[in-house]
Length: 91
Figure 1 (cartoon, rainbow, N blue to C red):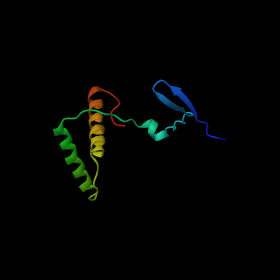
Figure 2: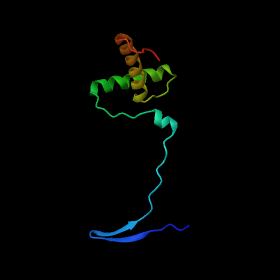
Figure 3: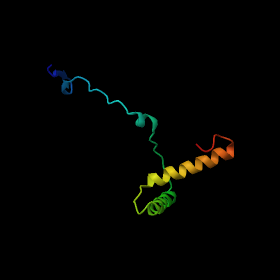
């Protein structure tokens, strides 16, 4: 089968009409995990960098990213808040 491309004259120039690309399907892991973007004070970011370094030393000298420390801090904080507020608590 041939890839069909048509030239369409447009007031602002020539446009190539090409078939739409197939969208990639998300994997199960990507569907389960979410990406969040937020602002964080520089002082808290520095604390995360220090925590990640300490966690890496404890893990045998492996350099760990800040996100590793952030996930650990978030989990511990969520567990404590849920226990305090009567939520589900530890998972």
